[in-house]
Image 1 (cartoon, rainbow, N blue to C red):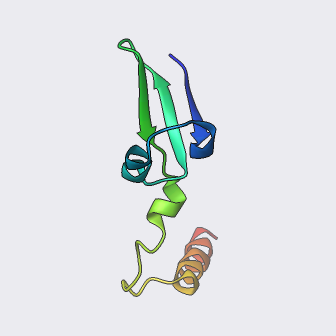
Image 2: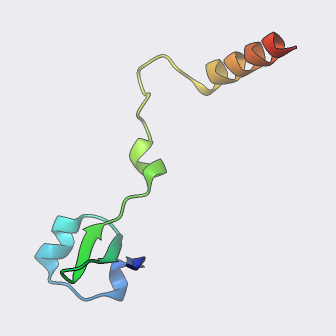
Length: 73
């Protein structure tokens, strides 16, 4: 079965469906029953802000990586 990601501008849908999908890209997947149209969200974008307020920072991440390397030696 094939699948592809297309920009919403490439396909014509009624405005109310476009708003329900709520993204700029759509995944089109072939199934046994026909074709499935599903919103496509980039995982990186979905994860953005996930650690906000947790006290975890890029600096802390790199400190941990340095400490891990020192332990390897």
